[in-house]
Amino acid sequence: MKNNPIDKIRDLLAEPAARRKAVICAGVVAVLAIGGAGIAIASNRPEPIDSSPSAVEKTETDGDKAPGAESVAPADIAKICPTLTLDGQDVGAPADELTVTTGQGRVLVTQRARGDAAAIVDSTARRSAALARSLNGCETGGKTVETVTWAAIDEGGNVEVAVTNSPASAPTGGTTADVVNGSGGHVISDGVWNSDGVHDAGYEQNAGTVTDSAGGKIEAGGKAETTETDEGDKKDPGKTDEVKANDSGGKADSKKDESKGSSGSQKSSGTSGSSATGSSPAQSQKKWVPEQGHWETDYGQVWVPNVVYVRHGRFICNACGATFDSKNGFYAHSDAMYAQGQNHDGYTDDSYTTSEDQGHYEQQATGRHWVVDVAGHWE
Image (cartoon, rainbow, N blue to C red; front, side, top):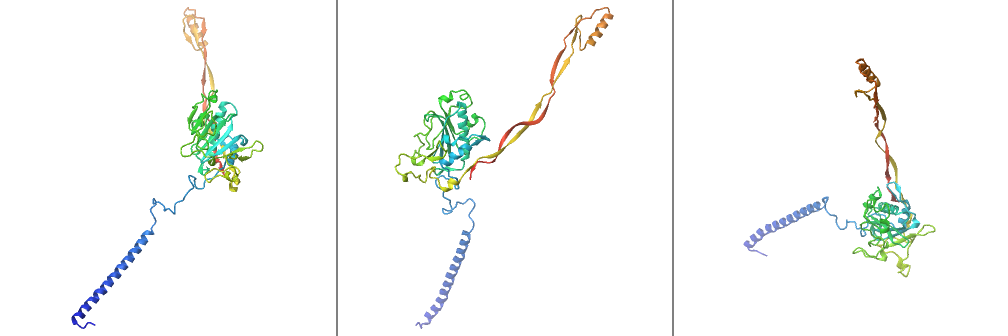
């Protein structure tokens, strides 16, 4: 115990300082608490519109597959080929004549070439464009469909005509030259190219790039399935599936891979296209609804002719060469000359006829065009 008066005074002076220190500390804590609340409030404000979402908020997709895209297998594609239309015209092909192979975002359809050379080029180009447009937004082999190739082959399996299209840019119709030139690539064999109605039809023999279902380049005269592939996407039997409709019932069966020994090893991987026998129940229930539309009449101003023939009189006096537009005019001249003692009795009839089109314009039907009401789609 401190009895020294000086010590007591020091203690009394020190106590308010300690209290003041406690008050100051409490004030700092309060300020920090208020500041913390302010920070919390600020952090709860909405992010700017252009701010990037957090990793948790980002939607992850499987490879290049678009969210919600329809997955189609070779058997699905074979079913819609007979219903294909382009520019309102039927361009479908019988399913039992086709072989469909799919890979990672690539589709290849092969068909025996039939008809004359010009018809083969036209039908192949139109079917490639129509099928590509039908598969727009779909995916196969785990990727969105990027290329669709239709190839017409001879008895030996060699390519006579092949055309590749992208679903997003496939032609919508027009002449054969419009459809061929509007594709992503085409090849034509020498035999077809040298035929009448082909080499002089307004398109080149070869243009762009034509690929198979594994990304390999297709050459005219070669096989539809090649071994040359794009860099980074080498051909892998596990990444392509094939279906060919049989001759009896037209039903699509998946082609077995002879290099695999067991049924378990034949199952497609998560990145491969679905095969005909491996389709899920949901896929087997989907059906293709063909394009629906109607024809509308085009009108324009049309000239309606009305030809009128006009006779022009021309009578020439044989004596003096005077010309008159009627016989009466000549007779009056002849009488006048006779009164003067001159003989102007003879004349030459040089009359002639002209025609004039006095027609007019009328609003008439000049043709018609196809209007799409409902685009072809999967249901």
